[in-house]
View 1 (spheres, rainbow, N blue to C red):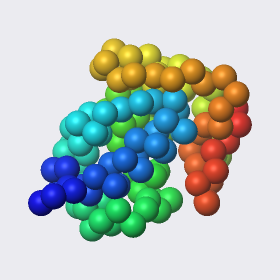
View 2: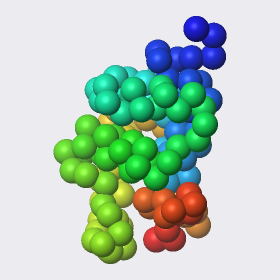
View 3: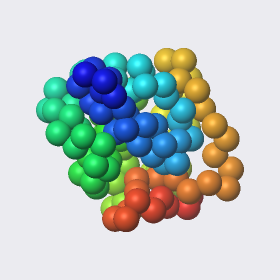
View 4: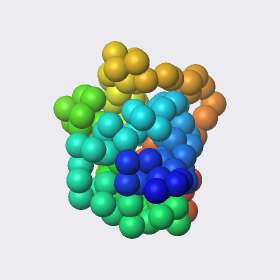
Length: 124
């Protein structure tokens, strides 16, 4: 199918790329994103049904958790754990990304963290 990358719409993959850059300064290629999505058939199926209609909060959280668990062995910190937990976690996550040849962008002054409803990040 034209406009679809391994079952997930290119538009959705590009949205995931934008959100990952915003959340954690991670710049993954579409191939890298799909490689991780292939490890979660249920999430991949939900994203495939989206057909580029945007990501909802559950999908954002599931994408972060999937990547985090695969890369660090721990889930992405939730708001209830506080900013300190996220501040401890992020360097671990970014180091794991580097070890997998995932490009990183500077984090200084950017919004990051698990997005709140409406897609806003948390300043840490």
